[in-house]
Image (cartoon, rainbow, N blue to C red; front, side, top):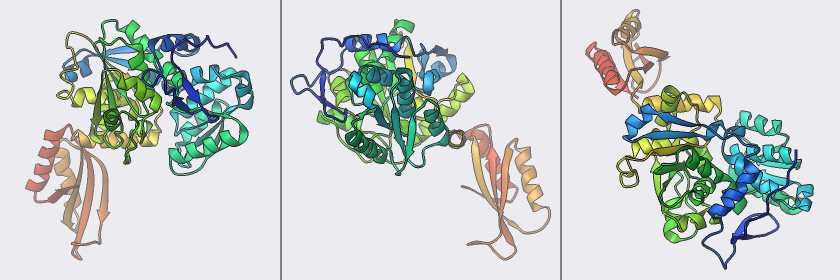
Length: 434
């Protein structure tokens, strides 16, 4: 299926080099994307994407002390908001660019968005992904018709290969966030928010390169506060806004890989720098607990990056006190749901541990019959659920007649975990929490 893109709005645009990466027009550095751009982009997006649900949540409203609404963009086509920006970018390519094809790089969501948009428009697409990219994301990208090339350890490696291929073959490189058309496409989420919750007061948005949060900021009036939420281990937005230009920071490993970007885009920064935007960071524990709570309380499976905005709302209330109007709803954007089940299991386990519901004990026992049964009986009497039991019979600190027993135990919370630990110790088992 193909369609013609609406005419570009007469607003300041950007200049491009052959690879398709945006460079701000020096005559208009502050406003590369306006509300008018977002509304024009919507003409392209609306016939294709889902108008994702807006879900109210009493559970999260109680936790946040405000009326909380969840914008369920993880239920979008391809599992994230990324398809919006990809559709706009590809729809506005010149005929000769479409003929030569496109190339992109991503660990998952952008890959699927570009592949889906390319199939809709009849454009040949190649997507470079890291060698260890999650198999479900690779298979999904291929199922949309793109050719996937795996290699390298990082997304940055994939981006370098994609740019090289664009240069060598004349393909257009589709940047995941640093292009006005991409930002405008992502901003259509903001227009939907405004229609679904007309009295919205604050919107919390996961932020990596900044395409989504900048697009939403451009789409919304200044009366609506916007909060960009980053993972603590990948937090480049605050220094970049302070410096007035993109600043590259060191990023650590984070479960929120979808927003683990070392340097924001120049185009998103130009939008953010001219508008009122608060930047907040959240920890790994905050994110994992929120992913777990979303599954348990809202029945929504959301990837860690997609839950960052809500995590800030329920764990950083003090920092956000001056941007939350308790008389107006707060919207948290759940930006994506593409998570490998294996990773999700680890995140749930991490979240349970962070919430005090997962206890790992090591007890040293004399290696004779009956003692293990007695230990397990004490745990059972405490009302805790033993998940795994393992023995360590040799190691530092163990006598020839001793064995260490590792127990993984599920409890009902921190107080119950502490009670279980004390019961085990009172029964004479030298339990150490690990």
